[in-house]
Length: 331
Image 1 (cartoon, rainbow, N blue to C red):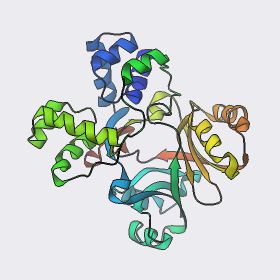
Image 2: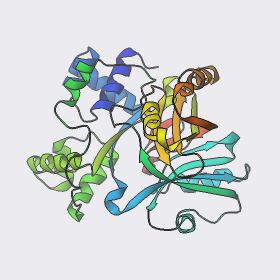
Image 3: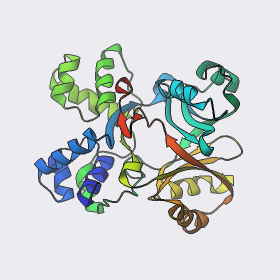
């Protein structure tokens, strides 16, 4: 079980995924050595992973939200195939295990049918598919992450972690080259790999690694995700809310929802429901409280649906195997 110190370490990582253990320990109220030990224990236990991710837009791709309704007795093999594909993320079983909800990376200019034909295998298990374009994510990375696990930090502590680095990308995207591949592959495995470790896999100097990371990060080409297995943190109920919001309220509602402690992800999408929210709660009463006290006060919502996630299959890059977050190669 995690405690208050672990919660603060996780929150510190959400704010600054590559912050030094000295800084993390300072805001968590423990020594540098204790911060490092706690971090490695959480990672070994499969409760969390820090991974580096490339913005799909760099390759001209967008993200699509797919809801695949399946025959319950045939959903397992299909789900296994989908979750092992590198172009599919955030996959889970919902609706009593008869629906797969996932995010697909595919070009934005292709038709809906082309997205399905290229990305989804033909299977007799599939009864129906709906797919919508993820138009705009709400919130700011490090600020709008799921914080229901606790470990709240003061604005001063967050500023200490973030420093003067801008919260949003600045300047045009940096162009990737083949030389970047080993660097990005290493960060996809471990987003906190040191400059020395990255220099070993790239053959670069540590100074060159530092310069390249700074260019990729500040331009928004490279971002980091702190993947958390919420069930292991005592939050057994993960849900996807499908909200219908009047266009005049879309931006305000989306940003307000993204700021809720219970929300792990919020985005504007195409389709009849134009906001998708992933909310993480302890149990059904916690979900009811969230819907009736927080969602109910957000302006502009005139309809909603709830998909209960019964089993999480994949986070941004990690598969869930035997109750642990693991890289796909180890699942």
